[in-house]
Image (cartoon, rainbow, N blue to C red; front, side):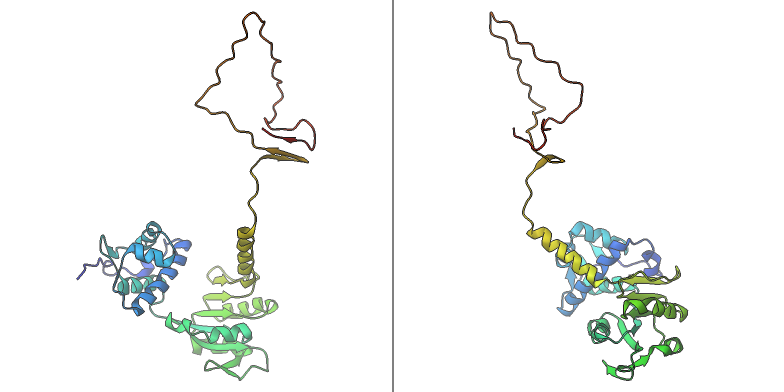
Length: 287
């Protein structure tokens, strides 16, 4: 039996959620996915180190993220998996579930409506709309595609809280306007362009092409050969790094040979310059 610190009576997720940074909210969704898997596997107690490893973050960051939820664990014991899962669901607004309408019954829309992961995470697709006569009336995942012209009229009966927009780019703003008019407070858009909406409407944009470009960059960066260390690069000039003298040692002055006058050195020029700057264009200076 482990003692579990609970959130004070009457405190809801909404009381704390306003102060949670967006990056922490993103990681909370990851923790929730991991915790759901642990519940399914029969795990009862998990330490912060174990949960952090499973979520791909360090334990200090995880503990800081969970501190936004109020007291949840016991030092030296860990977190009650089921209770922590419920707490995160409450803060993320998932406790009551969400009803979702999908606009766009193309390839992407049909794939989304057929994804079983939404239901187990509290999202139920209750309607799908399109303007293509060829798909209107067809059934996908148990839902009949309705004419998008009926969207505003059907919203009250469907009572959705979230809309997903999976239409061609040129139609996205018009669909967004209809959703705003119908009173939808939250919109997830797969169109790459920025949608205009009143400040009270929350819009999240998923740009698949941009995500692929970021993966392409990561792959190119990992495959790129290491560049040589360069101290200064100028127009047409290449200079290798010259070792800097140690700050802890000083060269001993050279005593001139007895009987010979000491050689006078030329005074330093007042013009600032780099110690490795070539005197002629295209030359290479080596130590």
